[in-house]
Length: 360
Image 1 (tube, rainbow, N blue to C red):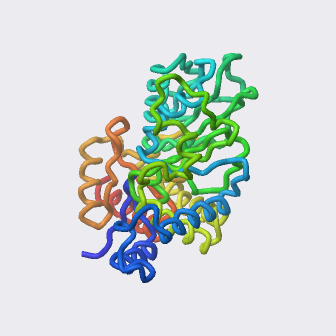
Image 2: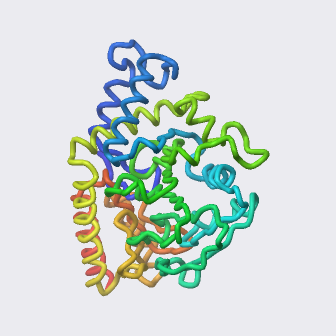
Image 3: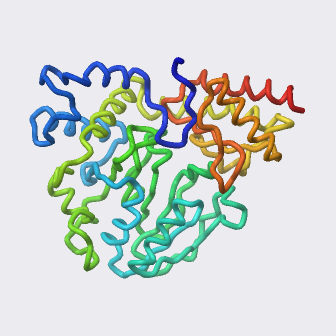
């Protein structure tokens, strides 16, 4: 069997040429006589890998010099605790709840201080982004927190919230590197890499330098202090070396393919093919309010659970993997990250048309 069209929400599809390159270097990386999985994180070869990766992501995202880039373990979920531990000086923060991951971050923050839900879209199963132009943000809030693209529910902020001058912290896991970003609008951006950038087990955190201090909440583990990690250039302990290596290759692939502007254009084109079909289909429909639709994750339903199951099973047999929706939404979800080729989306729509003709 050849490669399938993998619509998984994460761990997700990676660029084929990156995987081939990694395969070629599996036993011998650049004449070292060993693979990256086997090499010391203190070696010259790995030092070059991590420095090059940082240089490339800085270039791709246009990251200013007063922001640190950290390659950390524990995925995005570990940052749910690290954010309040490092930032909650007044023990208060504002959270906007637009899905499961924002909600989990909000619940985690409640352990460390007063987390205030200033807006939520839970009333309609997170199928839209609430109006964030004039929120009631507490005067003494340390930061405002968002999950910018909601993997499960397929929504995306098209306009960042008005934080009333407070620091913005964003979990960008499922839209990370999918389009250009103005880093200066954020105090902290972080993303688990297993959606758009690499294998699971690594989170990249981009943090403004003035927020990295020793002034953290009492009881903060040494490993969760951003300062520990920043002072050691992400090498305080053994990092996820192989994931950093693959991410570095993906950064090169992105640069070679025109950077984030080009990616955004391609992602818009891919998403349009699928959304246009959903808008005209009699059988399938999207679950998200139009103006809040994600370019990365597209949930859709037939309105009939048995038909949904049948679709997922037949799609799998036809080589379209991981289309089953999250249990909280039901139906289907196609995640169409950077590495999903445009023909994958075209073929999926072709298959959906055929299924609709046979089942209506």
